[in-house]
View (cartoon, rainbow, N blue to C red):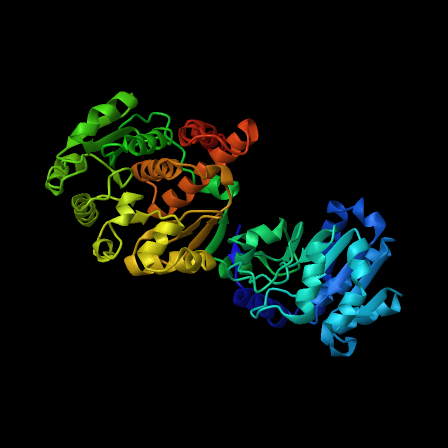
Length: 518
């Protein structure tokens, strides 16, 4: 699903109106009719008790007036609250307001907090509310009677449909501008907006429906080339069919470096994720005292022992010994369970700097980059960084709250500063490519909040790199299948309590979704 921001959407509107000659009132008519069609299909039973349209002062309010007209024609008891004086409406919105008046629709003028409170009973008794207050152009904090109206919508027991975007959300990044409507369904025009799917906007959007209002699809595709919501269709489109005569050498050899004393499970989970993602061969390089533990846990992977420190973490002297290990490998993962000592940190930095292969960096490998981002800046080979919000905050020297307040901005900053592909994990995981492309992941659930999940993901992405996927595709596909496997488990076993190893074991079912299409 392609995504646009507010500026792009405004430009698409302008091009359609001025370039193609489609009047704005036609676009408004199409938008309102499309919203009404979805409203009546989604909330048909609830509409038997009537509908309240809450209209703001701009074109979003105009869309609401069109919806009210169509509902009236369908015999629905519809009433409208205008959060602005009626004489302030202009152009297309005013035209549709006047039509509503002429049709005898009840309209209440509520331009201040007192008048909004006077209509509290409407908010409390209408089984369906249409949020047509603010559209995608909102950039300021919501205050005053607008905030009061939004709070009353949220406090009602009504089913809520938002027109274009939940009022109070930034369409550019999904941040809440003071207060925002929590919709059951959002009907947006022409293309989805970044704010619909980025955290926390996704929590306020509900079911997302996109309606065609007359803007050419080719124009949307051209304008939205840099942002996407990565879903099953995108996964299937990116999947590379495996040759029927393929063998273990065809599908690449992945090297995983990690698994220090007491942390062998992390490396094993990365290997399990890689093996379940189609890597032809997997080798785990771990400190010598851990090698036999890992070998005992992994039947299908090979192991190599590394020179180690007295506490069982890699010695920096082990770096030179990796040169031979890189031969005939196609990709490397570093970090799962590697350790936090000074010597392990130096080891990680040297590997990240000198490794001549595509490299996925996670966990303790990321901690080795804190205050040392120049290590990956200088690399001529692809690097994928996979921080969770806490790790991202350390890498950017900021707070977790600041990262979560602007997840896309944080991922962009790290990708731009380092020239790496960045995977910022969490709800609606953000993948940012140094070329400026952004992908927001659709899969996953809160049951994944358990130890080892990130290690499994590291192995998945590494396996895809080993099979020849680009860093951008490996990151996007890896994140999606990881979350999709967890979603499948959650449906079958329950919403939480499943393990990272189980997610790895369910991966073949997800790969089958794409393989069956090829």
